Length: 103
Image 1 (cartoon, rainbow, N blue to C red):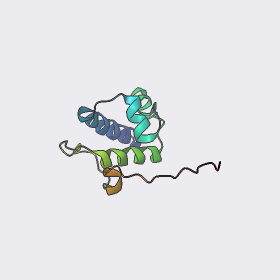
Image 2 (image 1 turned 90 degrees about the vertical axis):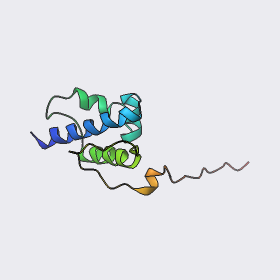
Image 3 (image 1 turned 180 degrees about the vertical axis):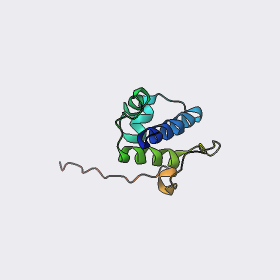
């Protein structure tokens, strides 16, 4: 099995398990996890070894799942889990200030 196929399978296993506790459309999950609504649909429809996934997209998606993983759900045993980043787990996001127009 190629590395690309293994990573694709890992990511889809994690995503499928996540969706058992956080049901939503694949497009919603892709938009939230990697800012690409078609991401998971492309991965599911890809032929073995021909998925168009960058290492950065894989890392971003896996970090999203790790940071937002439901506490009552077991992470897939065969898939390495990234270390949780506490600020993301708590949904703490830096805010950008809007500049108001002077009247």
